[in-house]
Length: 469
Ligand SMILES: [Ca+2]
Ligand SMILES: [Ca+2]
Image: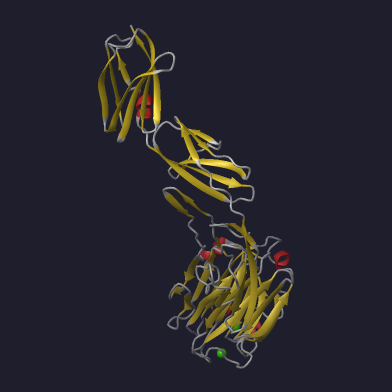
């Protein structure tokens, strides 16, 4: 499934889901050195009987296709050059650090179960090697030709030359089609060899999860041997239609099989020239990608991003210390946040708070579209009430009453006294007060009885019963 990365706006912050593309993980063994992030030297020309391994540590599933493009360098020694490079599939992480076989075993022998595409540049008569630099598909580390472990080949590595130890990088491509159960090998853009068979069952005991890597070795004869990885796809290589919501974006499942990509239309894409750009169309859009492989061949793939209906933005209202999210028939769930910290279990339409702060609620529609809004709660007098710091003294009172409370923000204060019939009998405004309210209010003219004191501050009001005696 495509991963959908959702973007939604909140009053005071923005969620940008970090879209991490899993980068290939490699381990090296033996004589291998990393030349850069994609090129590895497996053996060098200075030592006899050496071997090197390059191991990808992320399991891949042979139920999915793969398409690997790389360049192989076999060195410059022909008559005195050896021994070759093997691409292999295996299923044991112990192979990452295992000692590798050398000479004509090319690091492949001893790794079993396995499937190897063996690029062999040295004639070993005991292996029944052809004289030319040759290629075969062999299993379980067996480099001998003509055995039951030889699945295909041998054929010449190059369709045009008996020798590939020519100081040139040779384009190699290895593909797996799980529907056809076919592995195919191309060299210098020419199909060279293929094998059709149920390798998951016949080699890997029915478990389709495997690892891939390369080995190489030298013997008495030696060469510098390298592999440069170009484009690798070990995943379902079919673009799929997807749905996003308005204002959101999606990282496209990578187009595969190419060394370059060109998306059309190029609009609403983070980069129309990469395999997996982010797309943020505002309306439903069909994208077509032109894929150019390492041999210059072009193919097309496409997908449609359906942009779902917008959902209405809710509003948050506050009554006292409770926040209420507006409801709507399109909302199916709610999640409250304090700042950007999710509040576990706070999935009702309302939230009881105990302190000021920036509160957000994210609502989700039935098709998974999300939108979030926030409210910044600055507690003034209400917080004083919560704190118990509104003081009325004395109460009951006679000729005066002292009123005090704290303010968290500049507020316009209005004090009002209502009699029991609801008539206002006293009212005073105190504009733009800060910090603290402290006043003696004369009640000498009040008739004895029960009154309601109302304190209004910053749009909030607080009522308290006062007795004059
Ligand atoms: Ca050989
Ligand atoms: Ca040769």
